Image (cartoon, rainbow, N blue to C red; front, side, top):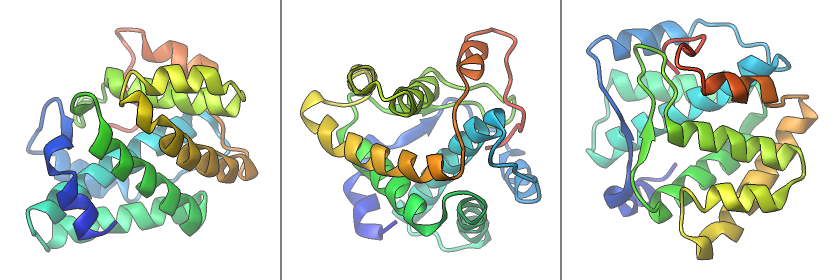
Amino acid sequence: MSQQQTKSSMHHMFHFQTQHEEDQELLNEYLDDELVPCQYRDYSEFILCVTRVWSQIAHLNMRGIQDNQLHEALNIWTQKFCSLGGKDAAHHWDSFLSFLTRNVRKPFLLGCASCGKVSDDEKILLLILHDIQSQDLDAARRNLSKLMWDIEIPTALHHLIMFESMMNENRARIDIEVLKALNEAAYTSKNLMH
């Protein structure tokens, strides 16, 4: 992710709903967590992880911070994509998130890193990926329009389709049962920090 891309999206960043002091410690612990790519729940967890880590990298880059925190976040990003999808998938997810931050209707809220809650915006993102996997591009467009301006949807959809084609090669799919569970008040993410 380039520094220029990050600065251009300064006004439309992703935001955590809450921020806890222990988030960085949990982020470091997540680095050691095993990921089984073909398990449905783990794929949803993977998406939340790389999205939240991308946001952290973008914030640190925007503020010009080059420290251990940035190094750890970049390390997690690299390791997660080495375990699933590889460099090309990482490129398309990075491109999609960069494009999304420049064109969001409102700031994209990330869930609570410490309590494991998934935000409404993250739920929409997982639903969009499920729509694409189901080859329901009309539904994907409708759900994307909840996050970004309609005129920009074709470019965002292109990156998502390319990303999902790589995920399909790894048999990584979002299960509809996971999407249903996200709407239950008691649901918490399996891994507290994504």
